Length: 363
Image (cartoon, rainbow, N blue to C red; front, side):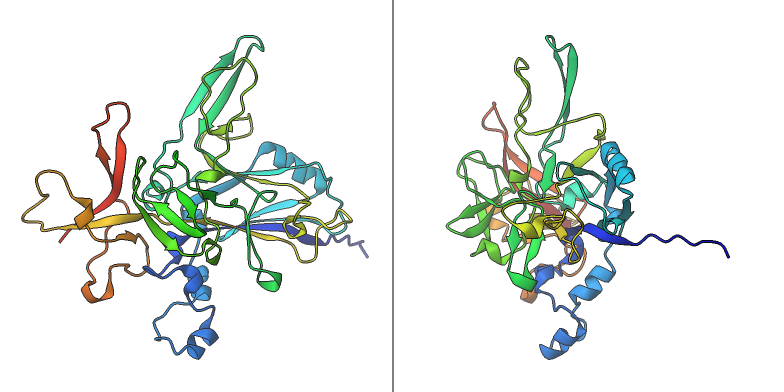
């Protein structure tokens, strides 16, 4: 009889990339949909009301986002005997049972955009991500940076809820509103979550929720880190990341996971023994869908002449694949997510101001 050798694995962590353009039902947030068919029945909701369970079953982030472990992480996983697995919701890493994970390692994953329309229906994608090369004469080497790249970490992520209802987000805590915030920034004002609908100065804003912690921790402008260049290298962009050799040039965001987080052990990948936890952490990244002014035009009349008055355009409404956020009594055709434009005020020659994001709909 031949000898059979088996190896048991267990999850070290899971990361879910959840985009609200594909998950929300019109103006109804994904998290406000009934959990399952039983809850839908208990709440006496209409038969066609989707459940979170159904929505996730049809969801596949791979149509819009790709994920790849960096070369250093692939080498680390090989050394640990670990395996990376792509999933419809995100990705999972498993390791052999009983394997001790060194406390000083970092797992890095590069997120890139696979769908060109992603930048139209996703909030906070208006600032361009540009690559810059800077030669350091004293070190005789070139530093490469990419602006406006998001970085997410389990050491800085925010949590919602407690106990069995605690949810771990890799996006950091929201920031208090500042003078530098631009259109679509998510900010805290008196405990409420607000989103700017135009640039400073004196930006317009809409309230998303009177209590920010009632909502998931969406990715936001605070997740783009400051660049700290080496001494003697002037002119480096303010925010973004250094493009190390194993970070692809098309990177949109970077996930960095450490084995231990001291101030909240729920975010740790391992227990006190350095091994994967039986109740492994499930992290979430929530991408907020873009909201725009919906402007309707008669095809025969075409566009109006002159400047569009956004104050008369009605409320800012979310773009979603499912449902229609247009007010129920006057529900109209929803706009195409691929047709979004920024309205600009060029009165200041030094910097154009975005006065609003618009979806034009021709009926």
